[in-house]
Length: 229
Image (cartoon, rainbow, N blue to C red; front, side):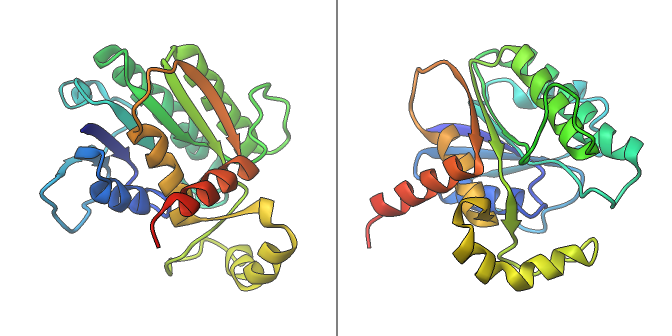
């Protein structure tokens, strides 16, 4: 039975990752680490509040012995300043990964990145540069199994507070967009499921895998095909 950590479990994707992990037959224990209370309990669940991800040193005892982390911590472009966006996207990720790697060198890491992430740092888009910088740092950290998820448009299956006008617009046109460009969209719950599945499976494989949106969609479709009716 796997022991999983979910970081950012109050977010759009992280909330589904937590629920799916708690239901997964291969997962025995789940630790949720975040800045806000979840508001519910579960026999498999341990909740750890950690308001300052700039320093994750105190999380070392919690992370020791865990098998994998599903890392969904993040924020929207435009919702915070550029400096804050970089801090949350890069600094928090790097600091958490540092403590996880030192506490448990064999842990698997599943990272929620984004379409267009640029590890070369050449992109004009801050989001792409910062996600790319985080990816580069994680790759250098030496995790034996690193899964980098780069979704395109993530469709929120549950209502949420939209950060700006473009998000409700995209939500409105989603049915048409999905029909015309199925490889460029992913449901938030399907993305979460894929992230948990790679962490919950039994494998001794050592690999660093980048999963673009089309790859994530293929994983989800394959999982649905295997599921009993």
